[in-house]
Length: 269
Image 1 (cartoon, rainbow, N blue to C red):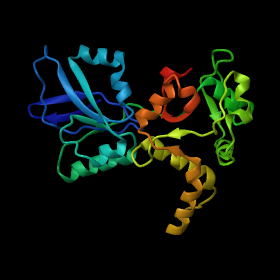
Image 2 (tube, helix red, strand yellow):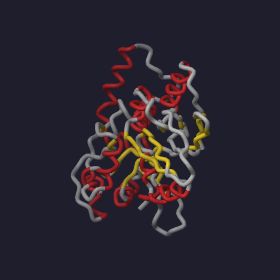
Image 3 (tube, helix red, strand yellow):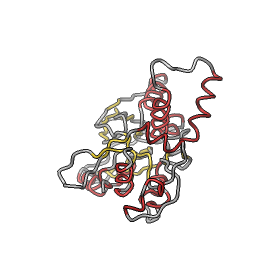
């Protein structure tokens, strides 16, 4: 629960973010009479799906609250003008810290709450997960449903090596699970310049390839060399919402079978 002190009232707002960072930006709205519906303006990226969920909307409407969302990447939320919004949900600690520090510097009221955490996952279809399992790249977690695990533990080192070697799905037996796909193995991610999930995945890739000991680049040149080495391992560019929409589209199983996302239980199968 996030609250901000408004003229003559306190306005409660429900929000959810990757690291639990939620920041309320005051736009001057006040509570209307109880029988009226209050529309709150929010700006966020992936957490838009939470507020667009029918059950969430129903529960909010019971309290006479409607939420209107403007989609934006987490970094755009942090550096853009948020004065016209009632609340924002940056997906990530750095973006949240930037917003709170900016508002504190202007003596503007702000309060942060962390309702829950949404971990980064590589979402895929069961056929692809089982193909990676057969190749020894993934291991199924225990499930209450026999032969229907919802989660697999991915060996990032082996997965990235498959990407580095430009291995294709057909080369590791995707056809054995009823799918024809000659595309390279890769994980689609949003634009790293505007998405917290893409930045988190980039850090995971970099650590996997160069995370032994204290191997932090000592110079700009070394950092550039590592960036050039890691770049071919990444497939990114679309906004986060578009990446996931492509994944769940009818064509997604062929063109974007593995995507970087936050944990979405509604698409667990």
